[in-house]
Image (cartoon, rainbow, N blue to C red):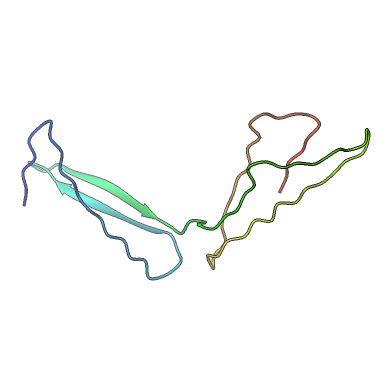
Length: 99
């Protein structure tokens, strides 16, 4: 049991040790004075830790009216499905990016 005065903070360390590859969810309940409680949600899930994405792609010269394709393979060492999204920061009609 600890007290927290207004304006100060208290560090809480949460140790997470997953036992399987899946999404985890829990809450930390902070008991406050009276009947009010504060619930702090905690989410944990596997992440892609070995993704190698190029910082730039050089398509070399391409003849006018022709096209060139560059494939970037995505893979994950986690034994579960993963979702991804692609955003074009500066779209241009000469380029198309698709999964």
